[in-house]
Length: 398
Image 1 (cartoon, rainbow, N blue to C red):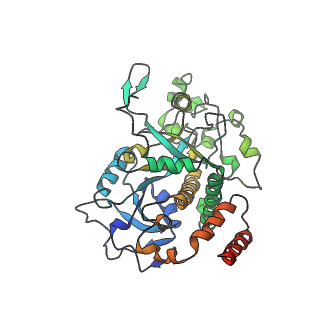
Image 2: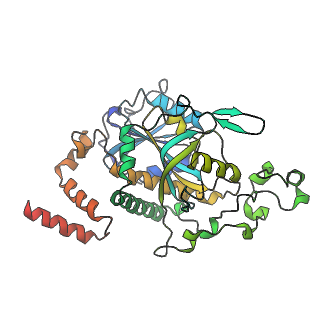
Image 3: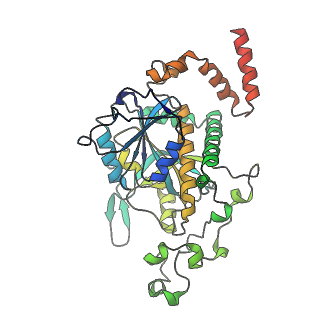
């Protein structure tokens, strides 16, 4: 358990980062990676229940005070309600992170492989359930007035920063370190294994194979992407989904250093209240809208705070889901969010001047110089000795 300190922020105005999670195990992973846990036993930081129904957990990640909200349910309505309630009481929130698990496409637009456990970071969000339903098709409303606004300048700036190789490699390095730290503490976040990462052909529906036991699946055998409700809640092993229909994944057959490391992808999220479990619909959205991730909360927070979705793919937006990936992916998303916040510069960050009393001790240390050295060397080496050597050389000439 993270240490509980006696000097939490004195007011809600000292919080600049909000974290939204739809599921408890998503929030558990985030809280497990707190650098400090602020014990609000006196309830000075919490709004009264008559003003705000949200339940908050307070802590610190890096140099940022963060407030975590677990939604009472999933979906954009729940997310919107939470941030609307939060907004009047946490007036200095500069960034909202929607963290957790999501569905993903198996490939990016250029054909690069996305595997389970990879993280998708939103460059923009589209609402896939706002439009017109015709007899044979759904037409999304994509006018300027109906689309979500593009991210504000500070969000676009930090996302642009990660297009640079140095900063992207630094993000991966930190994320993997935090992920390993979490997995060493809690075994439930461990990697489930390559044999559990199963991508079936898009036309291969998750349905009962023994048709004599399910009249509904027998009737719809010739209809793609249809299955009975019972089949959708049954595992591939119990349904008898055939391994010969699996699509080989190159990344899974060529592990680096004997391990499988998650990658981070920046791209479009499709967000709405529908849980996508259709490979054919997934492929249509990937091709038409160029999306690589599917979520149900991001659009609810998008226009109330500067928002970034950081979620890890636990299934391929088809019917072949495996619950074993949920906690591992929640841990990966939390680790990526913590690594992301190392690069975020809020208004209270001492690295850009000013800042709350919490960072006073940090400002007295030669932190920024050493951190800059680590920042420059980190993508080339993980040897702490190299950083010490460079720091000593700097100190002797100062």
